[in-house]
Image (cartoon, rainbow, N blue to C red; front, side):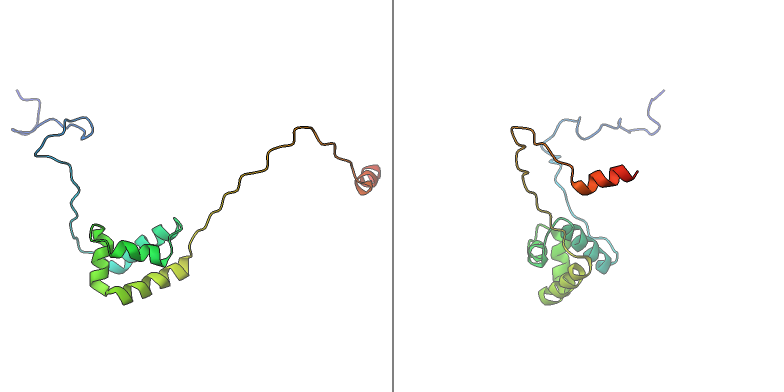
Length: 126
């Protein structure tokens, strides 16, 4: 009796644990599917805007034929219309900007703080 429900079935093996074979290069291949291109554009632009990308940076994705999603949108709408839409979406959702600064090192000696006269009077009232 077979341990597999279908004849010819092979056991499931996670791709990370199976050996790489020359005829299975594990390349990614894009496939076009039907859907709402306006929604896809909005989601893609908002994602990159939240990572700090401006209009020019997002548009640089569209001219790259290897980024097939954005490149397809460029072919669908044309550069001028796509730039207008990207600008509109970024204008609505904004671009997140984050700055980091190193804090000054703590002093080598402890600093004694004085209590102000106002605080002392307030403690006396309690």
